[in-house]
Amino acid sequence: MAIDRLEHSQRSALGLKNRLKPGDWLFTAVTGFAAIVVLAVVAGMFLELTQQAWPALRAGGISVVWDTAWDPSHKVFGVGAFILGTLITSVFALVFATIVAVLVALFLVEIAPGWVARPVSYVVELLAAIPSVVYGLWGIFVLGVFIRDHLGPALIRYLGWVPFVDGTPLITGLFSACLILTIMILPTVMAVSRDVIAAVPRSQREGILALGATRWEMIRIAVLPYARSGVLGAAILGLARAVGETLAVTLVIGNSVQIPGNIFAPAYTMASVIANQFPEATGLHRAALIEVALILLAITFVINVVARLLVWKVTGGQRAVVQE
Amino acid sequence: MTHLNLSPVRPSDEPLPDMLRETGGASAEFAHAAPRPMPEGTPIALSAHNVGAWYGSKKAISGISMEIAKNAVTALIGPSGCGKSTYIRCFNRMHEFAPHARVEGTILLEGADVYAPGVDPARVRQRVGMVFQKPNPFPTMSVVENVAAGLRFMGVRNRAEISDRVEEALKLAALWDEVKSDLKKPGIALSGGQQQRLCIARTIAVEPEVVLMDEPCSALDPVATLKIEDLMRGLAERYTIIIVTHNMQQAARVSDYTAFLLMAGDGAGHLVEYRSTADIFTNPHDKRTEDYITGRFG
Image 1 (cartoon, rainbow over the protein chains, first blue to last red):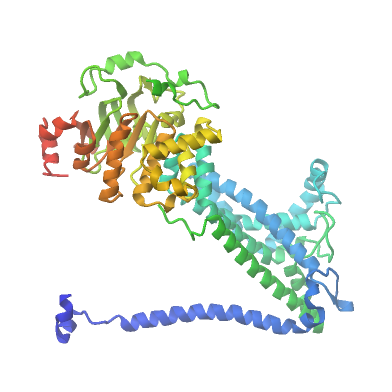
Image 2: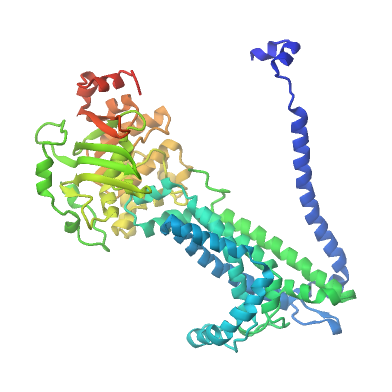
């Protein structure tokens, strides 16, 4: 380059000096620091939780994970029932919310005209802005009553042959919590799925149409497979929210430490037991609750790792499809 | 003609004759109107009469008529924005996939009106295949699955038949030797030129009568481009090929007939001249054609 042969003074005169260097350095330092802070917060949380839960960890050992008896007055702290409650409600919500969300997203992107799609999209996204406590109260006064009087009996009558669909529908119980969670994570899963489906390139749609596909065949063969890694990601976002959701679930799940015998039985989740008992807990009880929090954190971590592996496997090792 | 009779029937749809609704009167009426550079008696695969197309209120092409010779390569040339892609997208009813798109005029495929009421656009597209500007293999499918993608719409389910047709299509697309050892790998793992030949294989696997190519080489390097051009000459023995290109040398190399389109004062593309390729490049009749092919504009 000719510029290299210029005298230093000439370069300065041309404004070609490395004026940006301090700015670049500062930018690297600030962004790097922010990234390290995030890592430090996570690591610190793990350490702190482990330390605080240590008495319970030492007393209970690994078996608390499958022990289902929880009796603070007798210093029995099995976490199994809470883990089960969290897993059942979250997985139920994940499956049903994803199915409904993908159907809604397909309708909005592929079928509905703009004047329908925009308001519907907006309303579904608005569901995400409703506070958790409102969902909980609505769950008790509206959804719970509906389940007790109509939905529950109908399910038992028509789907009674399905395992665990029996018992007595109440206002609060496992099923109410499942439905509330489904509704609560729906907007997140729907919004992300909609964006992912809308981002399927036109060239993919036209490519399959040009081979003689109908609109439904286009969706099934070109759109959904192309969008599947994104939809999976959307579902994981929803799952993460469902696992940690506390207040609404606490209000409607019934808060009973047991292995639920059917879908209408009261149950308990990890987040709920912490919220309910932490204020009064002392000593080993307190340590045990912190242990529950530690397990919750670990489960969230495992879910994220497994989900990432799943996305990676489904997409054949590509992070995302970059082809346009 | 035997080839036409093999044309697949979608089992779920109405029988073929309905689709082939005769518009003989219209055909005869238009026969003299559409430009016809080929010798008298040449079979016609597709004839377009007074075709206009809109995007919303914007008119993209206006009153273009052409008769397309069967088993020949017909090139559409012209500067960007002259509507040549829009025009061929009317032939397989792909234009209407664009929002607020509209088509007027008549397009006859072997004498049958592809815009007649009750005609299923999906069936039209089986008979009029399309290769796009950018290679667009389906990223979640392997090489084989890509080529077989259209077969299921024809009701071909038999595994042996699928693999025969896939192999034949890949051979016709001059890709078989390069991919036969790893047919299971993803279609997008191939090079750009191979991807485009994969898309050609995918298109001819469904045995269309007409293959539309919308600037099929514009995203490829010169070597890959030459391969596709060679391929086109061979494919013309079995298929009617219509290629849009802004590369005049390409039109001169591959096509039998060439049409020159130009945007007129109203902003819509018009047909300026449509003659045999040899004629149009050596002895253009219209001053605008001459200016374009001698590189004076465009």
